[in-house]
Length: 310
Image (cartoon, rainbow, N blue to C red; front, side, top):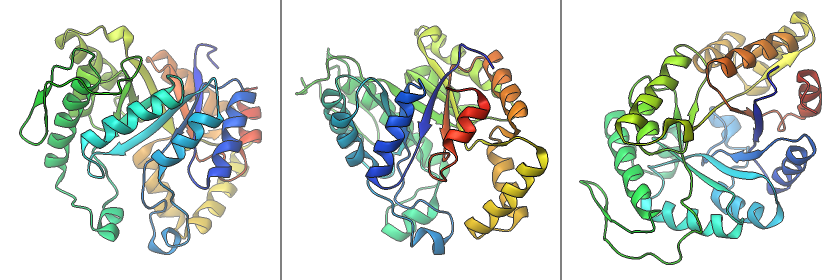
């Protein structure tokens, strides 16, 4: 496996679990702990009703004070949940509390059920992308020490010196599976582009880099990352048995679970197969990979050992 790759964990759940995951990140020489921002943490109503889903940004405030030496990332906050002014204030607060270790990820939102349950407006995909583009422009201006302001159709920010300001320009992260809009927005505004694995991986990275050049930005300063629920076992038989058990645990058929993973294309298979997949992504430009979910089911040490992340 490429030694140039850096790694992080993406974990959700009770705060105690997050602290334990942060310890594992430090012990294994990884660089970041990321939290998803969801109000429901399961796709089925039955599991969602019994799966605790704390507020990720509040939890990051605790982690800002109880960890050191690792990046703290929200991966990602749906623009449907909060006005960009709230995101800006929260991000500055978290960055100052953590000593400059916070990265703000922002996305369109995709889980319609959590919006239905909590009564949060959920516009169509086209409108959510328009909201995201304006929110990123707003945040980019809000984090600018020259306070240029922003005037959009949906969001407006006066040319006004905000206080407090962060001690640096807070990194913005844009991620998703989009082929064209997402890479363009990342190249125009983001400091980190989180590219979901799968088809056209290299092409999406190049579109981000091209958009950065068009925006007058240095594409080499954009961190290229990816994330996925890695499942790896020593043999193909063990891998297959694990997926059967995982489908039962999630209340899904094996066919539905296979379809779910096929849409997201995470690195999965034997340890050697996963190492090869991650190496391939590194060849295409990936610099950081976030392991999703591996701490939640308790198999993190075995997986990291098998992949040689010690």
